[in-house]
Length: 438
Image (tube, rainbow, N blue to C red; front, side, top):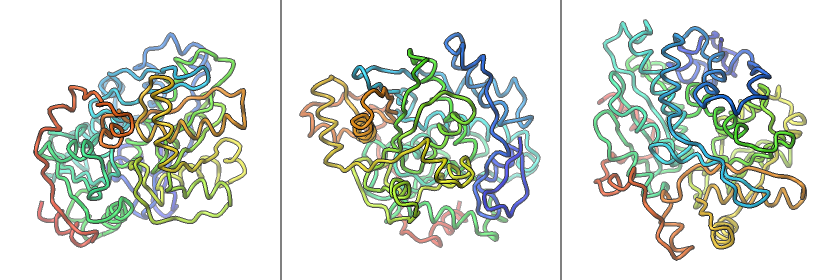
């Protein structure tokens, strides 16, 4: 499999080079030259496949010969070694729980897959193996990416990780997950928004002189090794879906649009998903685009579903590429909804009281959007993606339900640790100076 830049000004590369570079030299995102079709046998008999076997069949065509089969099997096995259950909330709404990994967030799968791929390339790719320099993984986070990347890359030989996050705009649990590991993990607390963090990262990748001094790659969903394995969730959904003759509508809490983009890619490869809903908070650039046909990026505003506080989602350009830049084709498969904080809170409380199911704020955004869609399409059954464990937002949730959110053992000890971060302003030069000091 070869990958081309969506800016069309850089050479095509294989999976290894796309992973190591993160972003193409012309600042474009990498995209596969073709979308592989999964076998009909997998779709029809998916319940008889293990999760490891499903993931391997889905991802192998995207890897090509960049990683030997036995190594890829091990990487996949270590990536998906936790449950991803489909849980019934009502007769018409189900929750695919993506928070059973080590950092209690859906980004664990992408981060674990990418870290293991990069670990392999560090010792087997000539461009990395023959250099004494460490690879620097540079990533901006609006919440869950930071913790997942920190955990996935923690103590990986030959790799340093630098995580930028907006000060005061991630939850306390999320902040502890990315600031308490130490060793090769460095947290930069930026006085600004997530979009500003992301712009700083993009600017650094575009800095030719700096990239000659430091081997940089990205672990955001702009990196193909982070983005592509997110397809696995949707196949696991189908494996557990009982009404195979009635495919579900899938509602995805959407911020940077990597997750829903992976779902649309899975659909285009042959997975039977009826329709997608991009559930957004006040940062609703894409729903606006789907309503008006005009794409206008916005300055991100803070909400209680902070991982979705993105005003200019990087991965939407990939979604447009899937649909050959045609909005009419896209709108046949995708719709977008804007959900306010007040609606989010009301849904979180009502679902807990009426169905004894505790959503996190992002899941509550998705649930509200799905309800609004079902009000216009009453015979529809749907699935929300519950992307994070509620404990990550206990400071928002507990005052709403007047109860304590149980703390899983995986984060209980981390919450007690002392935060260690370096404060910088939203200034690319400060980021460059930090990287050069490392």
